[in-house]
Amino acid sequence: MSDTPPPATGRLTTHVLDTVHGTPAAGMSIALYVREPSPDGCADGRWLLLRSVVTNADGRVDGPLLQGEDFKPGHYRLVFDVDGYFRTRGTPLPATPFLTQVPLDFGIGDAGAHYHVPLLVSPWSYSTYRGS
Image (cartoon, rainbow, N blue to C red):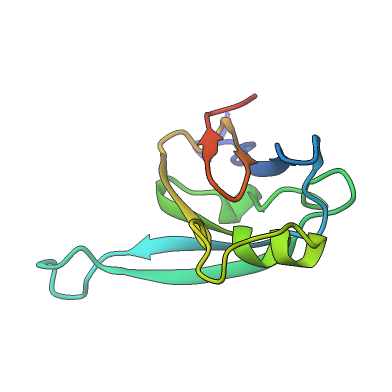
C-alpha cells in the first residue's frame, strides 16, 4: 500500500451562451487567471494570467481550462470579452457599451471535483452558476 495520494481528477470547464441570438457564443475570447498570494502576506496578492482561449462553434473551449496537476484549490478569475464578441457579431451597440468584459471570480476547494462555470450573456446582462 502506498502513501502517495491518488492524482487529482478534477477539472475546470466553461461555455458561453449568447442570449440575444439564442446560440452558443462562438469566437468569444476568455482569459483565465489565478490569484497568487502577496510575497509579504499583507496584500490580497495579484492575478496571474494562466491562459487565454477562444470558444469553439459550440460556445465551449476545446478541452478543460485546468485539469490534472494544474487543477489546484485556490481563487480564480475568468474574464469574458463580451463587447468584442458582440461587435464581431455585428450586434448594434452604443459607442460606450454597457458591458465590456465580464469578470467572474470563484474559488476551487476540491481538486477532485468538476467545476463548470457557464456564462449566459447579452450586451446588457449576464448570468452564471456552478454547472455540472
